Length: 135
Image 1 (cartoon, rainbow, N blue to C red):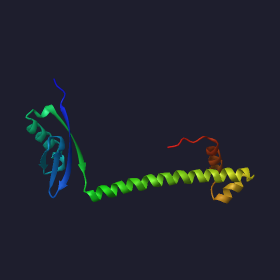
Image 2: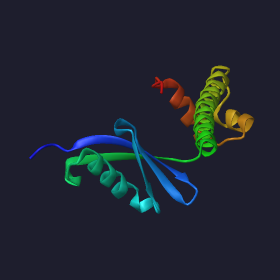
Image 3: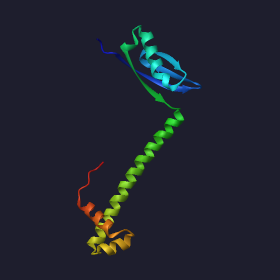
Image 4: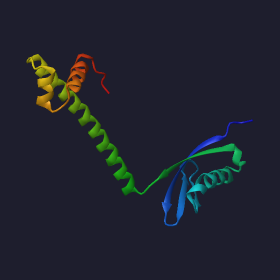
């Protein structure tokens, strides 16, 4: 038994149809519904190569419109920026607690100054003492 030939394909909506492209074979196909894409891609590849469908393994990457994909990428970037801002915020809060405690604020006084609980002040102080792994 031979290993099926692996091929990459892309699928993109084009009106009421899915347009399937297999660049390596410089060939295309169409499917009416999303759930037919892989089957059509496999059939097109097998027909083009004149081999049984079992002899091809087609990996299909589905694409949205360019505008939708750009919005998705923008959202991912914004999410990463937010994650970094949260990490910075947490670092600044730990530093504020550390500074207040070195200035001899009690847990209760620091809690009142920052509008948090005594337990949270203790937790932030404890977190400050631990080395942080950088993500």
